[in-house]
Image (cartoon, rainbow, N blue to C red):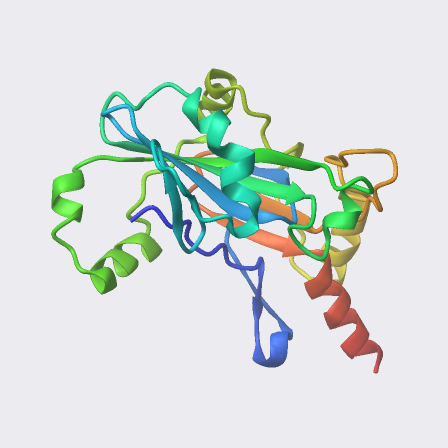
Length: 239
């Protein structure tokens, strides 16, 4: 019900990860934010004052638990933060955070040389009509989620939520009228727009960014542009 849906790549992926010319269609201005290479974490704020922490795939800890799942360091990093957040007034509010640095991923050294850990808010969903959702089975919930069933805040609401909760957002890089369409031009655009990460945690960090998440202001369209995908495509073309 609260698992974060997969974000499609801007250029579609073909066989063995090859990029295709087909792109996600953006109708209107496009907000570009940095995609941070960490682990997808979620805080579920419940209307009864309780909270639940989770990774993208699993629920790890609930308020009052004596023992939590230590996977990826999510509980240790976010337990006290979650306990200080205001409870939901209706339904379930899910804050989605990218937890990064430390020893979380192989890219952690790009953000820290001292094993520091940070987090950035990148989305918030508000789930209502919970009783109806609990009547769905796992397959039905997955189909509901993957077809846009979750209700996410738009950009203005997300900015306000970040202030209310005391979270820093993933860096807003630029707002553009449109994205390039050709693969090679998009790669050059990516390099020019995000030459290094904006969320390094200490001076010794490597500084390489993972990529960009592009979305419309209303969040009606969203896609990711990763350096890895475009570099792999360029390498293959070079052969």
